[in-house]
Image (cartoon, rainbow, N blue to C red; front, side):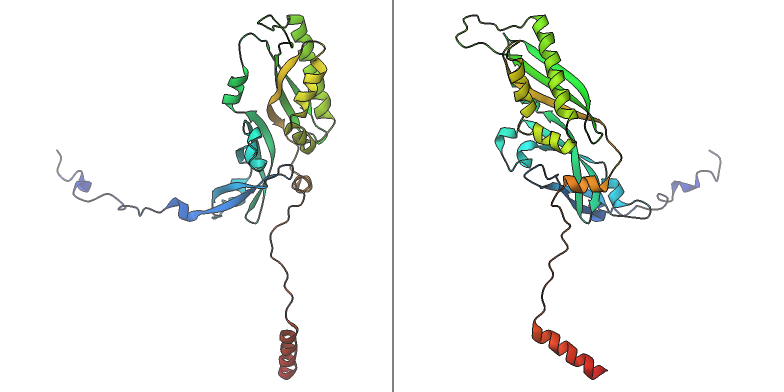
Length: 262
């Protein structure tokens, strides 16, 4: 080995050891606010690194998507536990993150529990545009039902009946979604109004059961509008404290000192 080479062998690491800093020390907690269509408005908290230089905290929060069970949003009502609602952060006001509806899904176990033997599964999906320019894709699912006092073990629908039912599903979903805005449409999803209507309309073709809108995707959203978001959040107002009346004697004393000072 040539003399004088590899001089850094004896010395330690360059720059020394970096001091370990807790990354959570630089983060802040923000409250997540759900739209006014849901019973529970305060749904949780989220974490973000504090504003530093050009990296702004609110920009890091915007467009985050939170997935919450509908049971939690409806005040712990367990009947809705199988539905998951996606909420997207649209705006940050103070320590509050205002969200808007961003889709819906079923839990896997609920979907699996519906699928059984000896019946026909019928699915349909359609792309619709609401009155406030949201483009959504709705997925519908339904199952054939045995008639009362039916002896036959199976209840299979013919392919022509399936096509008719699917056409009816698409027709109803389109009619319901295109006639209202996103806020009203979410109000239709919560009590499963569309599913019940499909069940009623298709009973003349073949009786159905367990008809649900199993999934909603938002394909395209209009440009962000703060006014519209505040409408969705309805009664929301930033907590700025309450104005307190000062006692009369305190006000008098203050006035007297002012005169003396003059």
